[in-house]
Image (cartoon, rainbow, N blue to C red; front, side, top):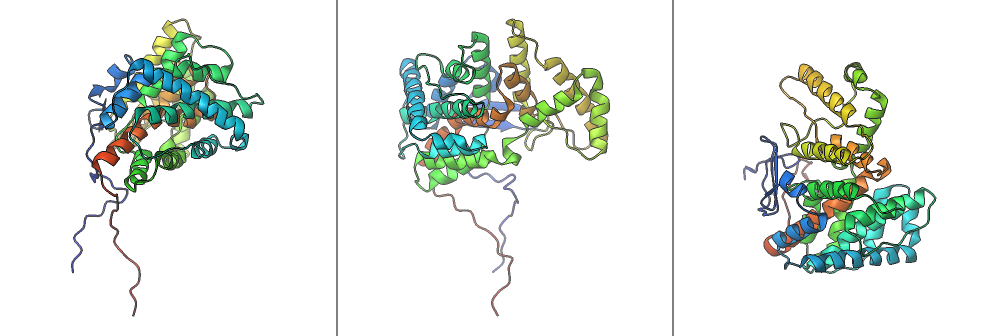
Length: 367
């Protein structure tokens, strides 16, 4: 029998699901989330509202805004109680290990239910903030269920109620990264859900996939790069020296986008908005200079394969501007992307089947 199956290493170009949740147009640099342009959604929606939109699109029943905010608050308090009973999970050195371990202690079923999803989503921010506190020598801190999710996270992290501008910026960040089609962690969550395993098992698996450096990205190293360059006028020589020595320029290039990542533009705008509110000056002017020089020099070196700024480039600048330490950057991403993971889990349960791709055997045959 002749094997005519198409092999795509990494599944490039292979469509394995239909979804109503998000669409990535790499050629045009467009990201659509639940029928909304990502920029329009980012500047006109809270993270809780975005999650409600994602989950309803995935197949959950809708929830009122008041009920959703209440459930997020309850979920943060429940997560704090779990940490008090199991403080050992926060002693792990890697924040994603702590996030994975703490999440695995949560109870869950296979239900498609916004209240269950809000509880799981709310917990991630509490786990991340309190891991950071413990590793800075601070005590665990209890959430304030009356605050918005973004405001409470920043309060937990920094021991003070944040400005509206800071919490708005975090809402923009979490909304923008809440979903991005069938990326590695989302696909992982759908694979686990396809086996009819429980919601937490799917989330823990997705966290494990996101931990990998090829998926979790490089916002931390972007900040290190900006610190090393120091001033806009140093950008060209630093980038040329790095490329000539074979080093990768962090935050440039994306597997899907052939043009500038639209999320980079959203975060750049969010940083401008933050500075206009009176916040201290950020690294924005330095980042713009580095991006401009990197794009120009990379185009010279690789004219047939232009590399543009990706989401991680301005993630580093935005999160730094709202006082989030770089050791939390991956956890911050997970705390936002969990909203999309849960939407895909719901959609998989309703419309998918067991995911079981084939492989082509290339080993020896028995004699």
